Image (cartoon, rainbow, N blue to C red):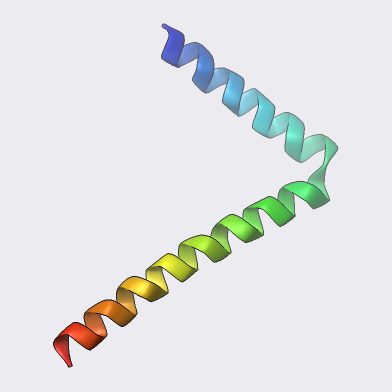
Amino acid sequence: MVKKVFTWAGIAFLIFFVAYNPNSAADVFKSLGSGVMDIAQGFGDFFTSLVA
């Protein structure tokens, strides 16, 4: 039950954040995407050097 409440509260906060601060929300998602891409690049480099 608590997990369900926190999930819906998180979704509501996300919608509120995007609706009232779209530029800030875009910056947050850009930085998150950049971080994920850096991690993926690191794994790719690791496996490339492991095989080569």
